[in-house]
Structure formats: C-alpha cells, structure tokens
Image 1: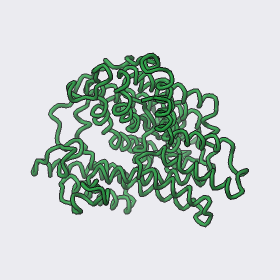
Image 2 (image 1 turned 180 degrees about the horizontal axis):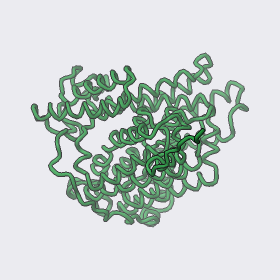
Image 3 (image 1 turned 45 degrees about the vertical axis):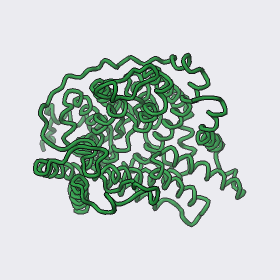
Image 4 (image 1 turned 45 degrees about the horizontal axis):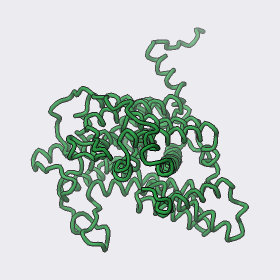
Length: 490
C-alpha cells in the first residue's frame, strides 16, 4: 500500500507556515477570514488618515491650530506620518502580540494636544510630552505593573468595559452619521437627525448601510461587513453623482468628512518631514516641571486606561480572552501599545493606541495577528494612495461601527445584575463611556464606585490593593482641574 501523498508546493508550505505562526486554525479562523478582517479593520479605521491631519494640522497657517510661537503642522505631512506610524505599529501588534488589534493616532489625545496643550508649548514640545508618556507606559508594561493592574480588575467590571465600549462605538457611529445630533438649545441636548427628522442624504446612506450589513449578518453571510461597506459605498457614489451633496461638518445636510466619489488620482508621494521633530524635554523648560508633569500625568492616565479598556473589549469580542479577562501575549500587547505612543510622538502625529474601530475586523472574523499585518500593510500603502482613503465616506463606516457595537453589547449577560454592589459600578462604567466620549472616564467611574461600595459595605478585603491605588489615581485625575488651579498650572 502506497504512502499518502503530501502536497509540498511552495504555496501550500507558505500557507501552512502562516497558519502555524499566527495559530490561525487553533483560534478557529482561516487565512481568507483573516485577510477579510484586516481589510475591514482598515476600511473602518482609514478615516484617521484624513481626520488626524484636520485636528492637528491644516492647509495654511491661519487654518491650523497654532502653538505658543505661531508654529503649525502641515496637513499633508501629518497625513503621511499618520499612515506610516499606524502601519508600522499595527504590523508590530500582529507579529509580536499575534492579536487582531489595529493601532493608530488616538482621537482623544490628539484633540487634547490641539485644544489644551499647544497654547502653552510648541508642537515639537507637545509631541515630546507624548514621547515621555509612551516611555512611562512601556516601563509600566515591562515591569509587569500594567499587567498586574489589568489582572486586578474584577471580571464583571471587565465585562462592563466591553459593553461600554460597544455602546461607545455605536454612539460614535450614530453621531458621525448625523442620525443623532446636538440640539441648538440646551434641552434636550441630543435629537434625532435635524429637528427630529431624517432628511440628509448622508444619513440616509448610513441607514441603507445599516440595513444591508444587518441583513447580511442576520443571514450569516461570510464577509458581511466588508460586502456591506463596499455595497453601501457604491450606492453612496451613485447618489452623490446625482444629488451632489457638499462636504460640510457644520451643515446638517452635508457629508461629515469626505464625499464619496471616484478619486481624481491614485498616487501621492508622502512627505515624512515631521518624523523625528519632537522636543522631549523642551516643555519642562518652557512652562516648568510642575506644569509639564501635570500634562504628562493626564496623557498617561488617558492613554493607559483607554488602551486597557479597548483591549479588554476587543479580546472578549475576538474570543481570545481567558475567564479572568486576560489574553495570550498580554504583556507583549501592552508594550507594543506603549511603543505606539513613543512612535506617534516622535513622528508628530500624537499618541498611537489600540483602536476600538478594529472591532469591525473582529466582527468580520479576524482572530489573529495576521489580520493586523494586513491592516498595517494597507496603512503603509495609504501613504502613497491617499486619494483612495477618501472613497468610503464616514457615514458608511459608521454603519459598520453600529453593527459591531451591537455585537459587543452582548457581553452584558456576564454581569450579575442581582448583586447591586457590582451592578451599579458596571452600570456607571457602561453609560459614562458614551455620554462623556471617553473610555477612561467610564473605567474611572467604575473603579471608584466599585472600591467605595465594597469598602462601605464591609467587603473591602475582597478588593485588590492595586484597585485602591488606581481608584485613588482616578480621583486625582478627575480633580486635576482644581489641582492645576491650586498649583498655578495652565
């Protein structure tokens, strides 16, 4: 009887090598699914290549946020460096941590720099503070302190963090699409569409996308998110060609960020002039060590707990989390994420952190770092193909985020709602994230209330000492405004 034949073609050996390296089969995935997941993550994250330059830079000095000396960052330079750092760090996350987590410039910190920091220091000095923030986070990760804090969080709070992030993602999608808007009056603060009705074409496109993706998901179609995003983008391009709706963030009827349409060009040469321009210690000289240290404290706290919450939610969504909420290569993931802050500051694009939007790729089936490698390579390509990143409108990506948010909220079943000592902190964690547009705020409220309720109900010994330390840190974080005023900072 002849021996069984083994296919040793180079292609099959390469696929087998990929499978083993990324543990694709072991995690219940396939190479095509990882590729689709990586592509979907990029599509839902690609807006950062457009949005980050709008927040940090501009096309002229008058348009851009100016620092204390009148300096400014050029839009094209920020866009190129944003794609570079996101690409390299997302690939690093895939290869080193083997997790389907995309990394890019964090929206909270870049806005904080543009609004609150650069009126005190130069852009180079502000990015130097981001570098220091990243170094602190990497040290905390390498020493194991960050992992200790991660594992000290009770499982029910970790579940609440996942649910809160799901609501946060969905809320972002609803707001970005124009389906939910702020009102002109103080009460109520939010409303449906414009004056309580949906009439804007971009919002209608969002609803079309929501129905298409939702239907495909309900029918368990493989690649539902990717198919839905592509199909809705085609619909948006056709409708835009007919109705020619302008792009206007301030207009209730305009496209939020970019109008859909075929690009005029495919190729653009990246300008990486901003790489290496950070001034690490300049802020300490310009505004003094106390003021600079308070800024670093704010950056570290925001970066640290936003990332912790995001990774908790993504790991649960990907099905790689252990019962205690930890996941494989946790320490490696925390180090890579901290290195993203260093790289982002060094390239003048703000701290790069794990993106909640990569949950879309996980929803598509991504389970390993191969998806991150795909996403990272597409980010690197985006430096040269900037016009293509503007084809998918933000409203279409928003539909994907709402669907993914619905998937993540399913973790609410892991919270024991009969124990009010756990229910209230979990509830506060969940609702404060979307209502304050901050993952860190939700985590802080959950930690503080968890510690106080346990302590005052006579169960304080059930709480890890680390949680007491972190809760005290969050009290300082929430009171940083009065503390800065007391110290004469700002």
